[in-house]
Image (cartoon, rainbow, N blue to C red; front, side):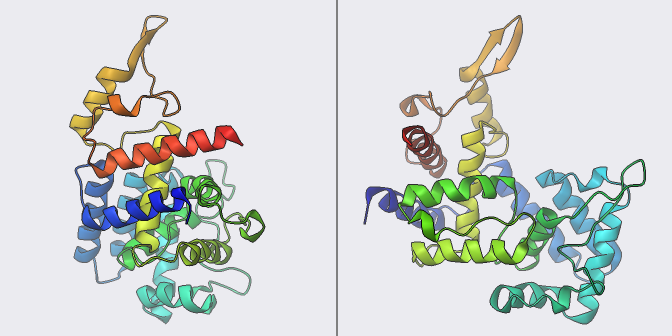
Length: 277
């Protein structure tokens, strides 16, 4: 086993010891789950409330479309009328059966277009928001599809030293191929500590740090410390200038034995690993 895999295994194991922290991510996660438990009658209003909260906290931008959230809520209700939607999502992970999600002869929950723009044109699908809904509906047993995961997946794959020839290619907005990709990585990592939730947490946290976007990975107190340390003045304006590629890990204003420190360390390793290629 190479050192990179050892680092990842230690991080996955540590995640199970630090289930919650004070970050915006953890608070948002617990808040959404609480709302799900309070809206369990599966009316269109319940589904709309759930989607609106997820859209707001995860910035999936569906609320910017005209009628998008309402149409997606109606589609979820249609699925639920045929099969309990939690079971539909969980069964899909096993059999990839799209029948419960069919909305017509040529479309399904994942491929349907939701909402329109100001000019009345269709605005496209909503795979990212649907996957996040499924993640909470199944209590974190469904993989989240979003741009950060798509970006970080190949980086983690290469970091682990897995053969490039075995990595499956992303098919944009294709939930079936996405699940197959995530399942493959979990299988390759082959650890009891690796599941959809823990893998998502690593991909999301490390991806946000990699991008230099720290607003949800840190608590307010931690972010204030980062802002004070990494803000500089350019052309008379204050700019937050954090770059994991150049930062000294020893100077990070977080506890060295914390889980968040380990996420920063992995992000820096990935950046350095990328630069060596």
